[in-house]
Amino acid sequence: MRKSLMVPLIFGIAGVAVLLGLGKWQVERLAWKERVLADIEAHIRADPVDLPAEPDPQADRYLPVKVTGRIGDEALRVLVSQKQVGAGYRVISALDSGGRRVLLDRGFVPVAVSLSAPAEGEVTVIGNLHWPDERLSATPENDVAGNIWFARDIAQMAQVLGTEPVLVVARSVSPAQEGITALPVDASGIPNDHLSYAITWFSLAAIWAAMTGIFIWRQVRAAKGAGA
Image 1: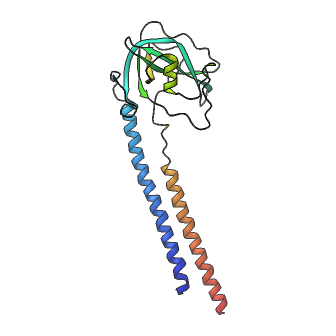
Image 2 (image 1 turned 45 degrees about the vertical axis):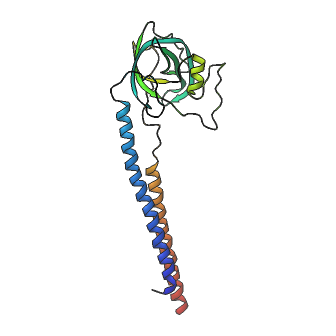
Image 3 (image 1 turned 90 degrees about the vertical axis):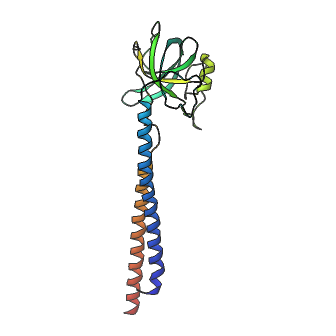
């Protein structure tokens, strides 16, 4: 092989090796992330425990809990959309367990459905503690006066309803709430883009290899034409 072709060949091989390495790293990250998500799902669905005295947003995230209390009459409406259903609201109320008041995400109601009054007397809620981070730069400010919320801002909701800044997202409520569908916590909202990243790096490696091959082939043809 001509010495003039050694540089592009080495450059091409090095580029392919780097891109393949990045793709392999993303495959390894994918396996790691899938294990993390599986652990989170197992944690979410574990046996519920009593509500901690001082829940920690990091240590107690997704903690399954069981709380008995009365649902307050006031309901905050968080605008959301569900596949096959359309627009609706997450319904957030206070849950008074006697000595404590916490926020309760009761579930989803379509926009066209009138929210019925909460069940009278005590209910037993099985759910998960959650501190959602839903506010993006483009998220509108919550319309507190009009009771249209665009993000579950825990501190603001707790101030409006007079509760602790602690949210229990219901998996089940007994007795059942008529017209409300639970939207329990799960791991589906946690990003896992490592497969797409791996495909991107492997695709770039293939493109790099093809471009290197085409370049060398053209150089060889040009050299043969010049020597003819």
